[in-house]
Amino acid sequence: MRRAAGHTADMAVLTLDRWNLAMGDGQPLVVIAGLNVLEDEALALQVARYLKAVAADLGLPFVFKGSFDKANRSSIKSYRGPGLKKGLAVLAKVKAEVGVPIATDIHEVDQAEAIAAVADIVQIPAFLCRQTDLVVATARATYAAGGLLHVKKGQFLAPWDAKNIVSKIKEATHGADITILCERGASFGYNNLVVDMLGIGEMQKLGCPVTIDATHAVQLPGADPRTGGASTGGRREGVAVIAKAAVAAGADGVFLEFHPDPDKALCDGPSCLPLDSAAGLLATLKAVHAAVRA
Image (cartoon, rainbow, N blue to C red; front, side):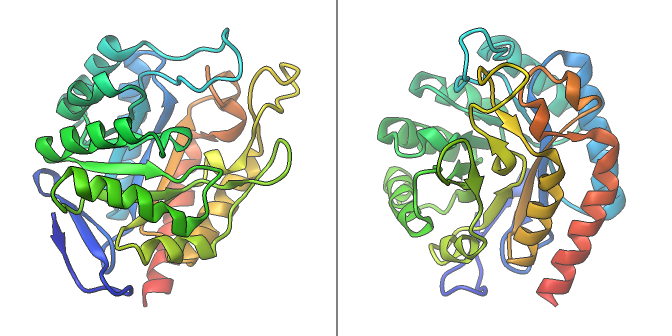
């Protein structure tokens, strides 16, 4: 990892040298995209290959994302994924066969080393971003493995309060710059989220690249009419709107979830995009990013 001067006073440009990938001021828009949750190996390989090809055509750095477990579910009956062992095996196969870096979530302290051994970017979910033991263990394992940490800002946090997350990570890694912060909306009354685009710049002032999770930002927590509130609803049509606005506001990367048939996705279908929409959206986001940085 390295630092470079940027549009904020001490802006970090973070790198994954083994993948020739850089994120931050003056760098291309990074695309972290894939499946909400792993369903099976074949689907993971299909989506990874498709998105890699789209990103390559556009000259955009790409990281495949897939969760092996979705621990934060509205209902105990909700599909959560294949679990740690099987899920990491699928991600390792995608990494080896498709040739892409991997991002996935962590939920428990004792998962840190196993996940960091496979994932190039380890992601801390929004609801867990203040869990000190988890943040510290994940930071240490990720740093030791040469990866980066992608931390989603909690729906309950002001952007500037993410400074405490960054501080914990630096203390755990002897001052290393490994943190990417992620905007994913703030709770706004009941069953709704809003995104304050000014928060992107506020978090960049902390010296970290910032991404937008446009997929989860359109969630309607506990408000899926299909299940009577036993799952999270969403406004799929808003994903592109939020993604474009965030890139225009200066986001360094985008986080997006796709599925060949979103209405049949096993988790958060109302918020994910059809796979065949990726090329058009990413081309637009690249153009917005170029216009803003110009």
